[in-house]
Image 1: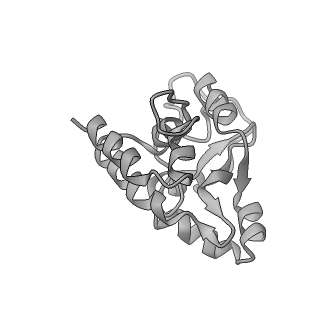
Image 2 (image 1 turned 45 degrees about the vertical axis):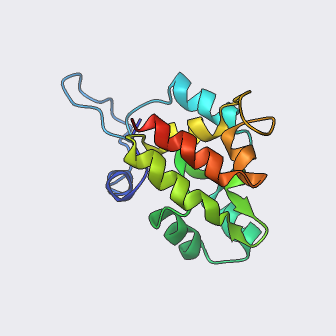
Image 3 (image 1 turned 45 degrees about the horizontal axis):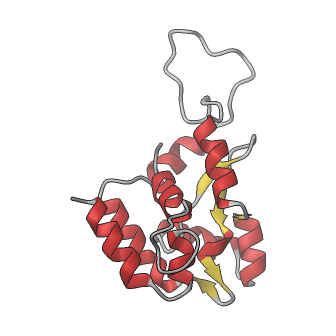
Length: 157
C-alpha cells in the first residue's frame, strides 16, 4: 500500500494506460496494477466516500481547494473503484470542512510508519475497547481525540 501524495500523483498523471498488453518483463506501474482485495475491503470498511468533485460540491469550494486539502494532509485520499479515482472518506468532513482533529492524528500514525491506506483502515476498523461504540474515527467525532492519539502513539513503539 502506497500513500497518495505527490509521488503517486506524478505517476498517475504521467499518461494514460496503453491498450496494448504490458510485456511480461515490464515492471508494473501504479496505473497497471489491478485493484486488490485490500482495496475492495478498504472501500467497504469505510462505506461512504467522496470523490474530489463531490467533496468540492459538498463544501462549496473549488476543486483546487480540495486538492490542496489533500496535499496539506488535512484529509487523506486513496484511489478506489474500478476506475481508481481518488476519494476521501466522507467522515473526514464536518459541515464547514475537514475535521481539524484529524490532521494531527494522521501525522502521528504516519510517523509510526503507516501509509495512507493503512491509516484509513486503522481509523475505520471497529474496536470494542474504545470509549464509544465503533471505530477510532467514531471516537474522534465524539470528542475522544486525545484517547485516539494516545493509542496511535502506542502503535509507533
